[in-house]
Image (cartoon, rainbow over all chains, first blue to last red; front, side, top):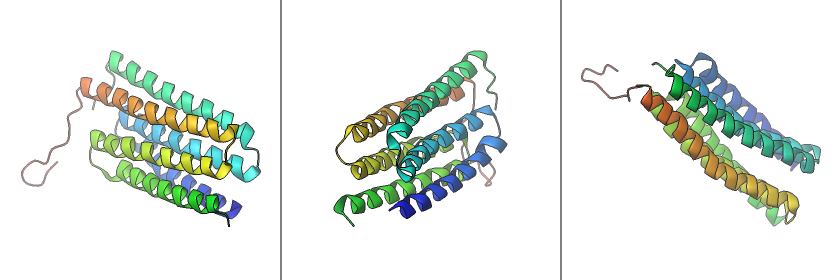
Length: 90
Length: 105
């Protein structure tokens, strides 16, 4: 079962690298924000898989909860900032 | 191998499939709104299914209750974030992609 979680975590890391392409070479800042949001969502699952693999999920679950909150607040604040300043030109 | 292990493996594999489709949509679709359409819905469903799978693997405890709380929170927060960033793009004048005549973008 640990081996299954390890393989799944490695596959999730490959998906994070694919999303990093959009976060790096995105045509404007909005595409980069969308890529970073997708990366944060996958990182949540990777953190929980690490907790299951290391058998210390009671600690990792709190980190994962805080990460979910920070990802949501960061995306919303970035969207509000770009909307008010109007810097998101295509 | 227990029954909960089988259920956990099935749910995690389905979640990984939806993660893969969302990432491919984020990479390959032609427009910003289309990319958000792929990653907004696909990532939400994938996170929900993966977290439910992990909660089934943990059994009935405080940890699984926290995992279910994270799943419900992500199910509410992810569409909100997607809508906020999509509204910012629309108000800043990003034009949606349409297929012009002649096959040109």
